[in-house]
Every structure is written in C-alpha cells, then in structure tokens.
Length: 270
Image (cartoon, rainbow, N blue to C red; front, side):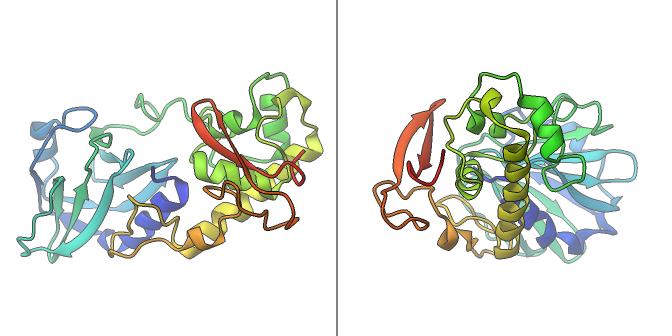
C-alpha cells in the first residue's frame, strides 16, 4: 500500500498541473471503494486547479470552488500521459484531462477512492486525522502525551492515523529499528526520551524515502513510470532470517502483530 513517501512523491511529480484548467474528466469504471459520483465530477470540468497537495495518504486537487480528493488505496497509482494518447491499461478508472496531458488513476484492487468535497476539514475521511509527521505539530512531546497511558504496542500506535498520519507497515518497522525500540513494546512503557527518538527517526526515514522516490514494492510506481528506490536501504522490512545490518550477528525476526508482518532485531531493539 502506498504510504506517505509514495504519495508525496506522486504529488511532487504532478506539480506541473498547478494553475492549469481541468478540461474534462473521463470515468471508465466507477467501481472503487466508494462508487464514483460521475455526475458531480462533471460539474468541475473547465475549473482551474490552483494547488495540488497531500494530506496524510490523500492527494488534494484544490479547485476554484471545491477540492478533488484522491486516495490511492492498496494498489492505486497515477501516471501522466499525453492528452491524445489512446493507450488504455487494464484497471484504468479515471482520467483527469488537461490542455496537453492527462493524469490517469489506475487501481487493480479497487480500494482507492475519489470524492468531490467542499472542505478538507469537514470530510469524513479527513476530519479525524492526526498531525503530519514531518510538520512542527508532531514531535516527541506530543507523541509521548498521546500514548503514555496506552497499552497498545508502539508499532500499532505509529500506524494509528489518529495519532500521526501517513505511516504504514513498512515505515513503522523501519522507524522503530532506527530508534532501537522493539515494535511489541507497550506504549506506556516508553519514556519521553524514547518518543523524542522516534520523532527523530520518523523524520529521518520519511525524508530519506521521499528523496529516493518511495519504496519499490510490487504495486507502486511513480507517475513517470519509474519505481521507487528506497527498498535498497530497508533495514528490517521483508528481511526475515537475514543478518541484522546493525549488529551483524542476530538474524531479523518476523512475527505477526495486529495481523501485520513485523520485523525487528532482538539484540538491537529493546
């Protein structure tokens, strides 16, 4: 599933469409997680796109009178194509057509969604989200106060979008390894010093992943067709039974935590 760095990489790749007119919208298949409201989407054609931004794992197209909210879901990708190209790929759902090019949303597993919304602050998908992990609103003090009484494992707390947005399974594993904290630790056992360390690792790992273009996994491609390159730097995720890159002695252990594959080094993470 695309996480914050993959979505941010996609947003950066389509910045050329800022201040361009959205000439038309073509819906090939409306069957996504929520059925696409084709009639409402047709109302925004010929509107100017003033800004394309990200909130958590969502892409926001800010229009003249509303916003178009796109979620990539489990396997969704966007790609850029020439306006007159008639190349259709299986699982293409929607085309946003501009003067010379178009943005195409492809989603094989159909867990993605697209909504026309009046305000990102009131929409049900956005109004309960926590702070952005790369913003000043998220820091070690905030995170400590948020989780200090929780019995949940710290990995689950990191993936809870009410606490902090955009961190999925891959980066939660990587962040906790970098912070040297075992993913099964109960939140209430963490010290403020440790949550400060987690904040530092979050910003370090996510910024590096964005710089390198996201994580190369079987489903994710950037809009220009390239895969991300962060996988070459993954320290624990999907490295079960391989030697730890830090201690070089212990093998990476894999367990299932909250129904998600979880990786850690028994010696390096406490």
